[in-house]
Length: 255
Image (tube, rainbow, N blue to C red; front, side, top):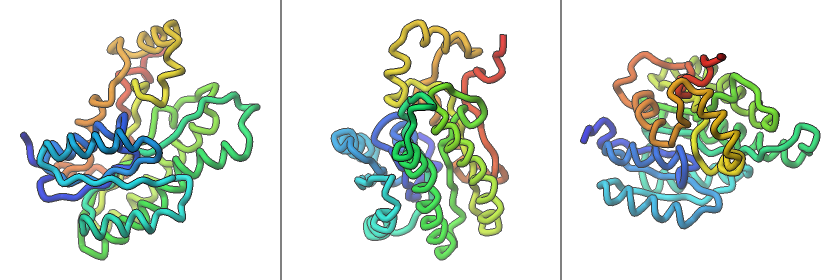
């Protein structure tokens, strides 16, 4: 086992399931102590704790409604009390309620913005401040999406948030680079997770999406672990302010 994160503490938002869980377990497997946040999937969070501890990690969970930015200080206090400092931050939590453009009301629009962008802005602000105060040359990763680059008929609210995260990454790389903190985003393509399970239950659509990729399969959460861990590790000495597209060649396969 590679111990690239031995002795490091990591926070992964939305880490109870899907891509977040896979990355959190990858960090634990390589020696990190990991805290995940979750909203409503407490059983999944509990099972993560068990898996991470079996890997030798100190593992923690924090329930939070990420549409409520007022809850961020409590999260930071919990981390300081239980873990001390933070070396790694993965901003993964997100929602994508597929909806026709004309049926999206203000309430849904604002919730998607708050969960996908606003919460991560203020979590990152708080964590980065602590990193700087402690002299930690940390690593911050935002889980964006191929949807930041291409459109989606039922994702008009979601695509805005992912494009916004990439813009934030560009600016944060400048703000935090002078402190030795690297900031990047990972853009998954179509990954088989709960967020799109209903949409991909249409077998014809699923086959179409598989054929759109160069590798002729959809991704799974574990496909995101290796690229994420490189960007988060000390092996990454010069990559900041950029987006890494991990889509199985979907974007380039126009024919």
